[in-house]
Each structure stands twice: as C-alpha cells, then as structure tokens.
Image 1 (cartoon, rainbow, N blue to C red):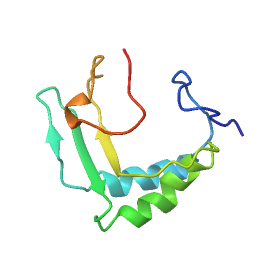
Image 2: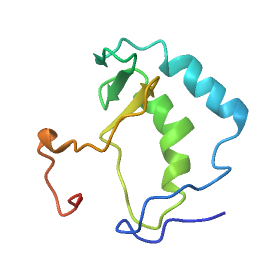
Image 3: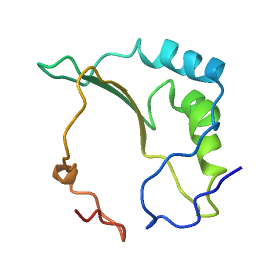
Image 4: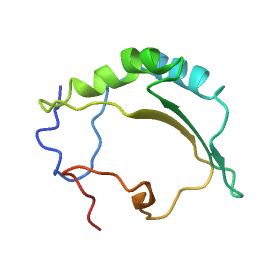
Length: 106
C-alpha cells in the first residue's frame, strides 16, 4: 500500500484505501447528520467533533485507515461529510485560526 511519508508533500490520491462497500456505509450514516452548512449551489457540510456519538465509529471505520498511511502520529479533531453538487473553488479555511506548526501556503 502507498504511504504518505511527510505532511509537506503535494496533495494527491491514494487508491484503494476504502472498498466500495465501506464508502457506501460511510455515506449512508454520515449523510443523515444535520447539516452544519448549506450553500445556494447545493453543497452541504456535516461535521462530528470528539464529543459526537459517531466519533468512535468514524475513527474505527475511516480515520484509523488513514492513520495507517503515515508514520506520523496524527490525531482527529473532527470528521466531516461534504455533499458537493458544485465544486468549490480554491479557498482557505484560515478563518478557523488553527494553531500549531503546520500552516497552509497558497
């Protein structure tokens, strides 16, 4: 399996991390969550935090498989489900005012 060797690497795609059945299950449950955001172009966003009832399920079914791809000790703050009807343009989520050593550069 392909791994992510460093967080600074360029974005890309790693195929076959999840089976089609696993993806269907994730969509089935995550799509039932109340939407945290909906846009006029049909996109909607739902998120779960560490206190959410789905958090441990999300870690087991999704995040732990992602963790296996990197030797870096990464941790999950929140998980999300984006139902995207219209692709989002280039944007920054800086308004969250994330803290820590990693910063995104455009």
